[in-house]
Length: 87
Image (cartoon, rainbow, N blue to C red):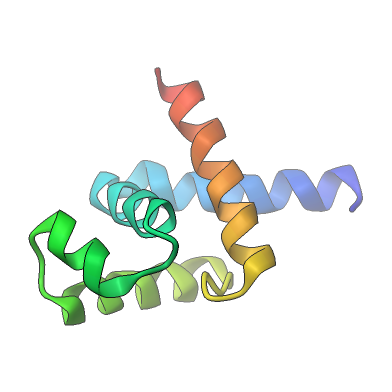
């Protein structure tokens, strides 16, 4: 993947995560729970529909499908980099 595209993708994900800490937390917990919506909703103390709404919002804003392995892996790495850069 060319550098410019990679940077653009990371910037897009970072922008979404910076704007909404709740989104960052939701996505991280979802990925850490192997995309298990029921378990993620339970751990976040939210309704499963709320979780789905947040995931749909993330997909809408980034164009990345979290149910796809490559999308989930890319977002997981971006979240890790984001967490490091914010600490």
